[in-house]
Image (cartoon, rainbow, N blue to C red; front, side):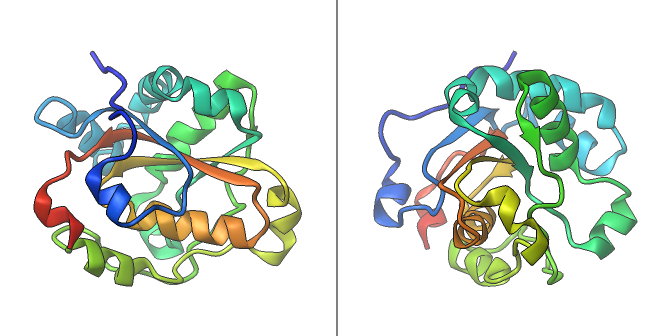
Length: 193
């Protein structure tokens, strides 16, 4: 059973290097219990898990949802989307938006540059890998300007991907960007490199 994972205040890593997104909520920790269903959603065509994860996020991120105007998923590059056939963050975001009555903006943020997997990279390596990888297309800026965006992803590790997305959304005029994820990797001292 998921529980909202939120540390009081900011964690030491966030204090040392503040994020581009304002607030974040995770439904649970990424551990031996949550790993398998998340990987099934991500790699095993288990899109039927998206409604469950959306419910988890609706509880964990209730305050963020109440203050948001629109929901935006972290996008995949078109080649990764073609090989996977779906974007796991978009599957969860679509359901969360529908259940909460928020506007769903699946193509307001795009990933025009293909990036390597973030797995196995240090925090600084992750930041370099996704630097400039996301943008809001010119025709979509009007959907972002002045709005409070709730960004959705599956797992938060260092925050590099979410930061790159939030930076692009803020550059397009978003009033605020918050983040909701299914699971949060427990920070280790080495994650702040």
